Image: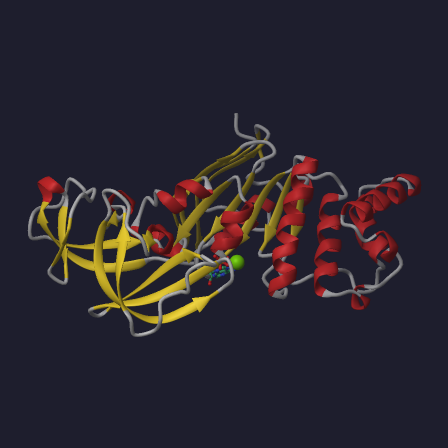
Length: 350
Ligand code: ADP
Ligand code: MG
């Protein structure tokens, strides 16, 4: 049974509908990301779960209880926002203990819980500092501790890493996930960053223009995108214009070059225009049995260390190829023409 249930939720502001018939069930202890471009309605759904907005339609349940029309304070929700939003006049300990104090906990209870939280976020020495004396990353860890100190039933995180430096962002991803696992707390994490969503989540809900496009594990949304939007929003993708030339053998032509063995959707007929979606890691420098190939010109070589990202030009189309570094073989050079190989089963035909 789901722990958090969002059922048939819609939301309009005036005559503008910004969330359309959203359904998602989250299991107890699950970590689910809402992923989508800015303005697609992620925060609006989160705010309805938190009780800061009322749905125009639909029901929200937590642990079987209908909370749709309850105030935030009646829902036992913890929330962290993009901007740190710590109380500037309170110390770190004061911030973390705030919710417990409001709830009427004793001084002893508060101080032991604050100590526990400080250990959890690995800032045990900073209890007496004020927010302005902390780095951005430290402030977000304190905001997280403040949100989870009162033992909320659901934790809502709205782009909590977006304002931080790239390096801290990546290390905090792991830290947040480790804390979430340790506490087993049911969590929704809003982000527009696909790498963040893929790396942190049990499941990802991909949204576009107020609608849910797909809900699935990171593996599923990346490898089996349900829609063209998901395919292009999640991960890097090269799109090749092609024409179906023989659907019986799964053959299409790209710039006149035949490529066979593709999975062509039922609805397509010979002569139809299609787009082939290729992930950078599906393309390779060396062919294997059953591979198809085409020729392309190298335009950029990005040596990233363990991976080399090669950009290629095929007619009017730009393509990305990722190859693991091979210390015995230098990468191709710019302007070289090379054969690009791929497993035809790895191509998404859109
Ligand atoms: P996201 O978090 O995915 O960036 P939001 O949920 O914040 O998107 O916003 C979705 C849409 O709803 C946007 O077009 C935004 O302008 C609009 N919106 C959000 N809050 C309000 C509001 N209080 N009044 C009117 N429009 C709003
Ligand atoms: Mg938002």
